[in-house]
Structure formats: C-alpha cells, structure tokens
Image (cartoon, rainbow, N blue to C red; front, side, top):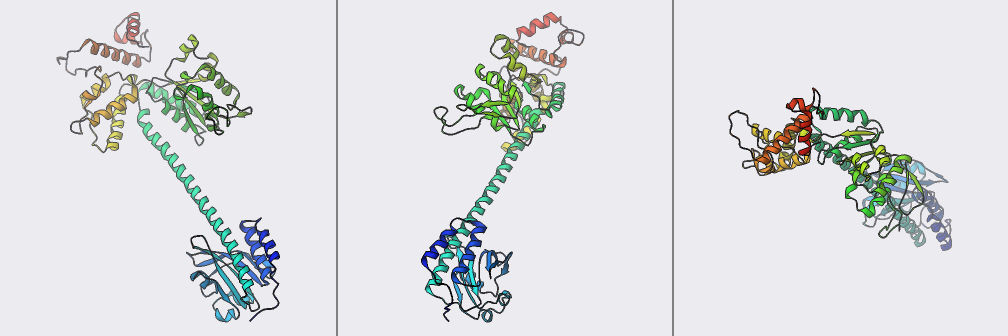
Amino acid sequence: MPVTDRPVLDQRLLDALVHGLAGSSGQAFFEQLVRQLALMLGVKGAWVTEWRPARRRLRALAFWFDDHYIEDYEYDIGGTPCEPVINRCEPTLVAERVIELYPRDPDLPALGAVSYLGQPLQDANGVVLGHLAVLDDKPLAASAALLSVFRLFTARASAELARLWRDQALAERETRLRALAEEARQLREDIARLQGEAEILGESPPMRRMREELRRVAGLDTTVLICGETGTGKELVASALHRQSGRAAMPFVRVNCAAIAPGLQESEFFGHEKGAFTGALQRRDGRFKQADGGTLFLDEVGEMPPDLQAKLLRVLQEGEFERVGGGRTEKVDVRLIAATHRDLAAMVAEGSFREDLWYRLNVFPLRVPPLRQRGDDILLLARALLARFARRHGLPLPTLTEQDERRLRGYPWPGNVRELENVLERALIISPDGRRLALERALPEASPPPLPMEPDEAVILTAAELAALEKANLERALAHCQGRIAGPDGAAALLGLHPNTLSSRLKALGLR
C-alpha cells in the first residue's frame, strides 16, 4: 500500500546529491551512495554488493542501516530476496511481508524488514557484477519517482563497480605481464648463461688463471678492462663478472662502442632532453642512467672518439653527467667494465686514446687467452658446442675422430671461439651421413693438415701449410711458457733455438 511519510523527491535536491557523488570513487563513493540513497528514499537501509559467483555469495561494498554502516557483511543468496535479482537478472520489489515470503533468510528478522527493493548491477556486456538493494520496516510503494531514483543510483553504482573491475583486471594483467617479462628476462639470462658455459669452459693454464682472477675481482666494484682478440668471449666474461658481483640483481647494460653512429654517441651514453636535436621527440635516458645501480659494459672501448672519451672520463671521476640539451647534473652509481681487442697502450702512445682515461680503465686488466693458446680446451669446447648444435638441429651427436682432433688442434683459429662455433656447425650440417664431421670441407683451405701419427706416413705440405704449421707450433710453445722467450723456462730453450732467432721468427710471422 502507498506510504505517505516518505520525503518529497525534489529534482534539484536529487541533482545536488548525485553531483556530490561525482567527486568520490571506490569505497568512499559506495559509502556515500548507499547513505544518500537511504536518505532520498526514506528507507531504513541500503547496500551495494559485488557478486562472487564461484561461492554464490554477495559481499557488501557498503551497507548503511539505521544511521550507521554495517561492516564486513557477506551472505549466501540462497533463500534471500536477493536471489531472484541475481539469478533472473531483473529488479525485484517486495512491497511488504518480506519475512513471510523469504523465511529462510536469517537476517531479515534481525533487521526488522518489511519491504525490499533490489536491482542487479551489470557491465556493458550484461555481466552481473553485484546488486543494489534497499529495505525498510514499513511497506514500500512502487511509485514512478522512487523507481526513477533507484534506477539512477543503480546506474551510477554499475558504472563505478565496472570501472573498479576493469582497473582490477588491468592491474592483474599488468602484474602477469611483469611476471612474464621477469620470467622472459630470467630465461634470456639463463640462455646466455647456458650458451656461455661452452665458451668459458677450459682447463688450460691460461683459462684457470683467467678464472681465478675473475673470481677475485668479481665481488668488488673495481673497474675491469677485458683484453683479448675478437671472438674470445670478452662479453661472456663481462657477464660473468656482473653475475658474480653484488650488483647481480641490478641491470647489466651492454654498449658496443663501435656500433653507435658518431653523431648519436653522446645521446646514447648520457641521454637527451626533448627537442635537444632533430628527431629528439621525447626525453630519453642514456645507457649510464639505465645501468644506475648495476653494471655498464663498454665493448670495443678503443673505438670511442676523443671528445666522448673526455666526457666518459668525467663520469668515471665524478659519477655525474648532463643529458644532451639539458642543464641539470645527474648522478649515477655504475660499475664499469670495458673490453677491447686493440692495444690501448699503443693507441695512447700514438695519441688516439687519452692517457688519463687509459689509467682509469686499466685498474684491473683481465686477459682472455686466444683459442690457439688453450691446448686441449679446443677439444673440450668442440664437444660441448657439437652437443648444442645437434640438439638445435635435431641431428645425431657425432663423435670426434683422432683425425678430427688433430685437425682442430692444428688450426690456429684466428677467429677464436666464434670461428670454432661456425666451423663446427658448418661441418655438422654438411656431414654426409649425419654422424661424421666434414671438417676437411668446413675448415678454411689455409689450415694445416693433421700431423702424422706414424713416422713413415707420407705427407707433403705446401709452403703455406708449412708456414701455418710453424706458426701454430710457435704459438703453442709460447702458451706453454706463458709468453717467456729467453731463459731456461723460455720458449727458445723448448724449441732449441737462440732467443734472438726465435724473436726474429715471431716478428716475421706477426706474433706477439
């Protein structure tokens, strides 16, 4: 029956109340909404919920009842007047005797309920998100004005709850994406580590000495200069230094100084402000900023132009720089590792590399030995690399024959481990039966033949092959004697030559 003591629904008052909700969101919005709805309709209570379909329960986001908020209100919809609202997804009005109609609802008697009005909250696709409901201790008349107000508040509640669900879904997606990105980053690091295991393998004296020096300096913040020929694995050594340092959880940023366009080198290292030059459409962090707290690896540092060398020196000395086009000084905490295949000392002498920068970089030199000085490490590496290539290409793993081993040990490997990788993969791919390496076709033509195993084996060498064989033999002698030429433990004594004669042969063959 009609109720005459409810407030008059003045449109201006309604507009003011609805406008007041516009300044709030989330929990504060829902608390204001149910309180204002109860006041507007003159009912005992109002509440807004979110639907939990897996448990068939509604959880109140805000519940205003008898001049106060009820906290932590959650209930099963079975046997309640809210059940048809959710199940049939349509408004439900119980004008009176709600307790008699829903005797299984344990909360209605405690609330002194007589009447009930509920309507589902849905998103744009019609998915039920929750519901908005009111109850009173008096009969509730279904007037057009009351239903209009109720629909208005329901629309506002639906929009806000849908927004919260979208934000939550977006946050969950971002969390998953960050987790996936972290997994991908870790996977890339694991791949790099696994790929690097073969290249860093080795039990030769030069490799054992290099690994011991690496272990000693890795945990410090000392600047390291990694020296070695192209293809020896300098970047892998730098990565190992970072992984074994206290900065392992922070970024490891790689820069190939030889691969950056000359006009962009300063921006690449130090970043730039928006509009600093043509094409600078936005502010950008440089490599030093990206590596803040971690490690910056400068590969081929000998290719850095002189003007950039001066700016690098300042960062190393003071730990600060300015972006291109900016005037604000920024500070960074970066451990620097540099690498080069060039003789920086000779470049200093000829004036193409700054002497003060050379001293800054050369705090702890770490030399990666060339493959030709690593003895049987070549075979150890070859077996590990062949296992990797066989897995990658789905081919059977070939066994190295004695002739294969002689060929691998006899070749000087000017391209070092990188060349070894290429030769082995090529030899595996062109193998006639998939089980025997075609090294005779994969090795460069200038490589020396395998050394004879029997004294009377007839092997005729060309002049070029003899020169390559002599060069490889001298390099093995130098490696065995750790670079010493003269003295009882020197290479000259090992080879049965006068030290001056050996020095002349080394010079003629271009060996250091």
